[in-house]
Image 1 (tube, rainbow, N blue to C red):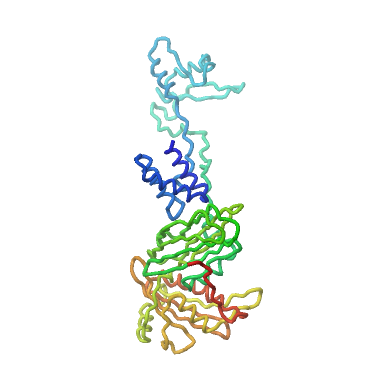
Image 2: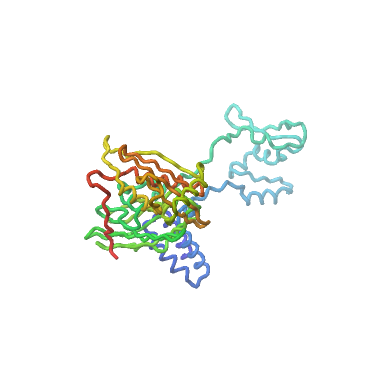
Length: 441
């Protein structure tokens, strides 16, 4: 019974992720039991539930296809047992009434199809019943290749497949208001990722070479309601290039004005393009959830590099143009039909430094331009990258050029820098204000 219950619990993990922490506690308890069968089953279910994505879990828990109908083994044995009797008794599928029909009994006693050059066919009569007749085989001999045995069957009906479950933790289901904290943390190591009237999500990050560590803080802003069945689900759009390891799960219950914590490790295997996302769900009167994009992107795995003017332009020419170069000319985004954003030298320099470029002074003849160098760390090795950012403050335009020793790197770095630079600075504030952490130590 306990083995069946463990199998039931892994199905609950797939159907009801909000109770996943409680079920994982059961799997951990039984993974150390003395019963070897229960121990193995619990350990396998625990490993399956802790995978970074739910794809394998959904496949394992998917509904089995229906089995095809099979010939009754009992009837087959009865036919074989009475085949040599003198009374030629015959058992016909269909029950008692079918065995009393002389025509059906005679039909079942006839030789099998295609024996002695005959093939049995069924022809409807005037009253709607089926009559049988033997016709010569179409190929004129006693052998057939079976091609015509399927004539008249409609084989064009497509096989029905179960619909793929909706992944609510994916980037297609991001919650409103996710952009502000995410864009700030693209160039900061700590801050508030998301905040509303119920929850505040903050993070601290540290990167060393190809390895990154994210510590997430979930603060219950309510002063009276407890967050129950607190669950987090990660979605990794590029698991081959970015490995994710959840070191722990947050507490399943977060009391009022308290917080839960979770540590997640990231390993950059190769240049990846899309950032992972996380769905946070809890019960507070009803099921509540937010889906956020985590600021884990390629430039977080970079380290600034120092180069002189001669070395910079020498490597710039060695790398050359496309496909190891990406360039774009763009302006500031418009809001409400008119520009409300501005450009400033301070903002431009802060973005370059926030993207972990080693800004090189006195290299470009135009002092307004920003040039920099950096080293990208992935598990497969190091890759050099160079940047040249040319602002036109009068026309509110930028020209951004990035070159790297690996052709997969420039388009990714260009994409995220453009996303931040085109936002500009709020003209009412003069510059981007710093956001407080709002988290407990």
